[in-house]
Picture 1 (cartoon, rainbow, N blue to C red):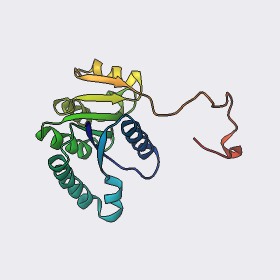
Picture 2 (picture 1 turned 180 degrees about the vertical axis):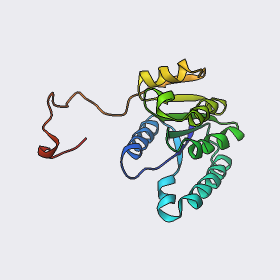
Picture 3 (picture 1 turned 90 degrees about the vertical axis):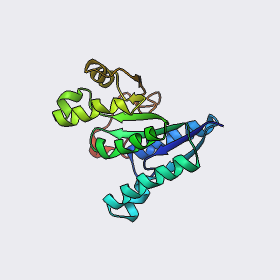
Picture 4 (picture 1 turned 60 degrees about the vertical axis):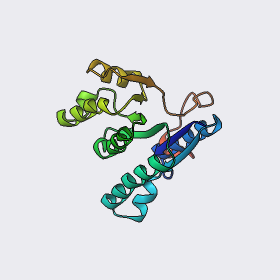
Length: 174
């Protein structure tokens, strides 16, 4: 059976919605998976303690569950502490996939130090999924050589209205 370890939250908005959708896709495709739910830990413990526990839990799940792949939503903010999960996975010789949420022009969006950390992560991230082609191009143009994929967020625009009401008149928000 194909096994994958997901790292990230499954409650709240944005990224949690994507995590839930990605886990559903892999489940439907026949994968067995486990989750290190960072949001659940952060709701129970102070942030520093929560992340230390999550790092430890990741090690335990890598040893006991033995996934082939570790997958994580990763953002340009918080990149460093999120990257630790990918480093741990590489120490256990697992394939790593980062689903990177970032602005299109990375070099302008972050500090030079932060940009260096993102580019350095190519040493421990095997595949990078990006939300837009401009973001992928920014990464590749600045030296990223490993596999990249563009997968926009999971929003079907097929049934969306052509025109939107002003925000104050809307009954629903996307």
